[in-house]
Image 1 (cartoon, rainbow, N blue to C red):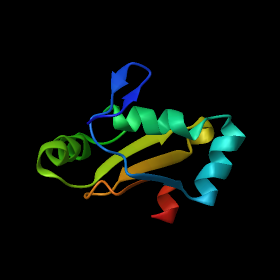
Image 2: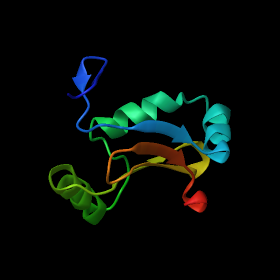
Image 3: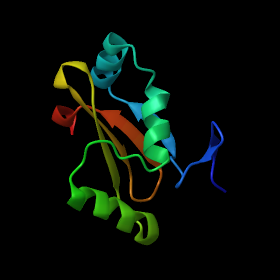
Image 4: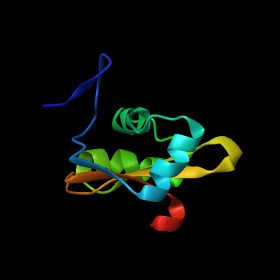
Length: 98
């Protein structure tokens, strides 16, 4: 069953929610609550990704596969949100931590 966030259904299970210390530090410095990015990701708002990555996410929703979102924060800092192909975990991280 899809989880509900603020009246909107999430498109897929998120699994365990984890974040790297670097990503949490950047989010705190920018005043961004991590769950807001998780919610956007879970609702299919992939942020700023290429059309190829967006199509890969669409395919992954029906066929299984990793899901990637990328959000640009203040100072052009990027944060990624990745859900594993088996939907066991969703991780917030910096691209340099991948």
